[in-house]
Image (cartoon, rainbow, N blue to C red; front, side, top):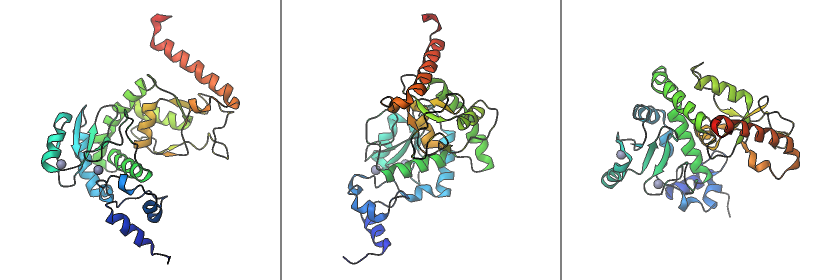
Length: 278
Ligand SMILES: [Zn+2]
Ligand SMILES: [Zn+2]
């Protein structure tokens, strides 16, 4: 077959209703992956336009309460209680909504394609390109880019993130992140600074081949976070490198010492949480 112009594949994807793509994936790969029919055609790249983001940011952060929804149609300013969102969909056919809550803030939901970015759910996590655009969208909605955003967003983020921090280990596995980022994050959520730490760089704690360095120390080189914090960081901060969960190290003898220190920490935490059981 004759080599096709790269835009050929982009047009083919667009004809199938999909105009977004993960930057590591070419339009040709996306088209040939067979994923197109399963992807949400209601997400689109215009949702990343700065003017769209700025308008929705105002709406989202001024309405941020438990069980609120915000419509992400570009022409619509609808927000409401979760119970009414199907009514809004029924009249306006606006598919993409953002479900707001004080802990799992900004869960993206498509009324036609079923939710794909819920914290408590086994529903599909979305294809690589879907997750890319969803995360980019929520990250942009949560970022402080203008002077006016500081007042609107920073305090609420500190509140939300310190609540997440407090409950993160309930019924949760633990995940390993770089200590220096964790320290800057604590400074932000405790109000010591109004500057959030930026994307999580988790590269210092890995070896050349990308696996976790087993010679690291808890509290010195790395810290632990729970599922909820991981979910939040991946969406609102973004991650370079990988976050390893401590469960995934269990089969590997070289992490024996490292896992032991994690277990000690967990025992200490649970005795602090239930002081009267001891
Ligand atoms: Zn959809
Ligand atoms: Zn709407």
